[in-house]
Image (tube, rainbow over all chains, first blue to last red; front, side, top):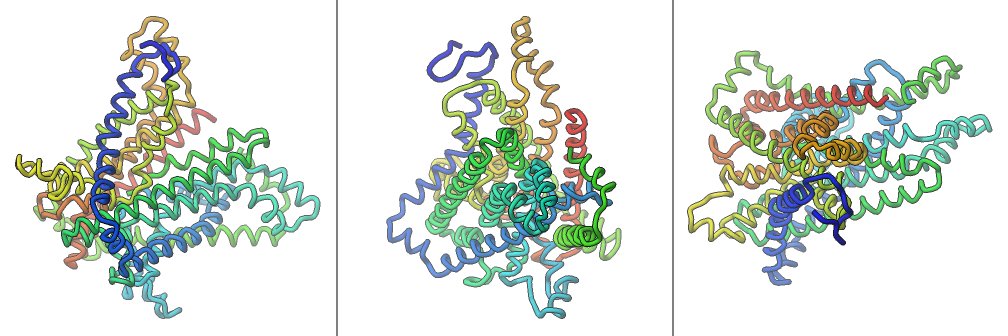
Length: 300
Length: 284
């Protein structure tokens, strides 16, 4: 195949075949179905669309989905940092095992983590009983249950994002600061935090994005009360079960829009972190290491 | 470097305050993980075996459960090879050639990761469902996609679409194409070059991508739930069967099926750790 405006010349074979297959499969399996959803939504009139997406029940579901995902991502940013820090900086028995366990929420089917969390945190479950007795808090079948499920789902995103940033952080700077008399808190605030902040923000955003769309692990523990503990994905499923295809399409379109915005946000955060590291000498390498956790985006 | 630093630190004098801080942080980290990860995992096994081995095994003596296991295996047997083939093709095109629109293509391949599983199911309902784009055409010809096995396979293909490609693209980009170019220049055919030069280089990354793809394919709940219609014995996969049993308060049976899925997750993590350990040893 001759070189053209479209691609640079190469002696390797298979460009037409592999690119053709890739674009065909991508279009047929991903782009065409997405287009069908957008097409279905555009067949609604404006007022029909707004009636669905601004309905009281829909608004309550956005509040819960976004609010719970935000709180869960914040909790994960805090504890995820401590976990990543302990794994990278300290040596303790079972460290490798703990490290392998971090990916459990990726590998465990969401329905399984859902029923497991519901059992553990139910008012009769072994953690649920204690929380009720000690603090008078009920987790299962309240909005707190949604938060707990989303913490579980989002944890690996933060840890796997922060870990490589901590490995790459320049420890000689920390030691220099200590030698010059900085307190541990100052070292953390002025040296460590700036170095890992982009990774932390990336992990937070990924955990948040995943949390907004999560379904399987939430529906068992949330109780699914309309206006109270009903997440947006569940509302879509309910509309489908009632054969309200227009309503499901409109809400689905909204969620799709949010996914695109989140994707854009993640890309912006990553290009921001890339710019931050230009000029530190090994900037390119750092960015590449930081980009790695995206590959771990497994999970069921 | 990461391995050497702590060893150096052990020899250094650590003031008691710092040591206490360290122990406190590690305790917080492990406590958090134990509550969040180990407690649910323990609950699955505890509930599954709550009434002993015999009752656990009886859970699998149910024709609907067996049908669900078969459907899950069938779905994975279709989805994993197809997405593996796609992943290799996409990685070859993207990593070995320079062309316009490449970064857009990578973003589009990643798209299913960013989309809620429920939306992944919904888009196929909008395409093939009774009120969908092609609904009438399919109905006239008596072809059922939604609430049938093809829909389940399609939804699973969608959610597991990026796994293998995502794993291979950075790996192949990093490895470069000099060896392949040498093989072609020396007269090797395209197939020979791929099988004898490329495949051995990407073997571990490929295994990694395939097992992650498989874990997700067997465990997918949201997307499959939307397109399945929950017809017992016909369109329920293992995760859906877990839901049905759980909602009928058949907890031992639900957790027995769930424990098989949990075992699958643990095996996936073990293979993943082994692959990473191997890759670390080869590069470092």
